[in-house]
Amino acid sequence: MSSDSWDSFGSKTKASDETPSEHLDLLCHELYTLELDLPNKLERIQQLQNEIALAFPEVEGEQSKTTSRFQVSCARGERWSWDKPMLEEIFGEGDLPEYVTRSLSVDKRKFKKLPSIDQNNLKPALTRKLDRAKIKVVQNV
Image (cartoon, rainbow, N blue to C red; front, side, top):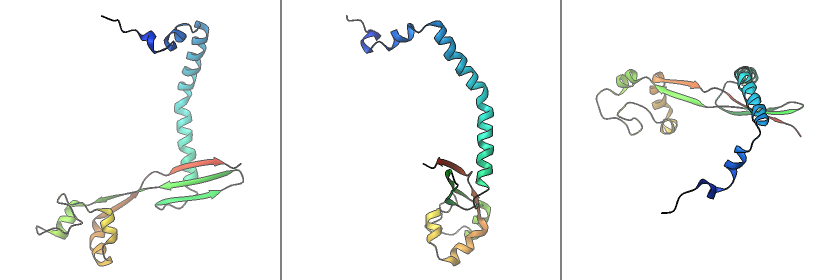
C-alpha cells in the first residue's frame, strides 16, 4: 500500500517551516498592529463615504462627479416593501391579478409596466427605501 505524502504537492510547507522566528515575529507584529487599527479605519471610511454621499442627490441609480484630482461615483439601489394588510384590503378574497403573488407581494418589474391607474391604486401599500450609498473614488491620471 502506497503512502500519501504532502511532499508530492511541492515545497511550500517546507518553506514555511524554514521561516526564521524573527521574520515570523515581525509578520505577526504587523498583522496584530493592523488588526488593532482596522476598526478605527473602517469607521473613518464609513464616515467619509457618508459625507461624500451627501454631495449627491438621494435618488436610485448611479451619479458621478469629478474633482480636480478624483472621479467620484455614488450608486444607490432601492428596496420595495409591500404592506400586506393593505394589499388584502385592495384585493380582498377574489382572484389575484398575475402581477400579485398569493403571499401578497407585487413584482417590481410588472408593477412598473402597469397602467398608472393600477399603479396609483397600489401605491399606498408601497414603501420604497434607498439602500446605503456605495461610493467609489478613482484618482485622476
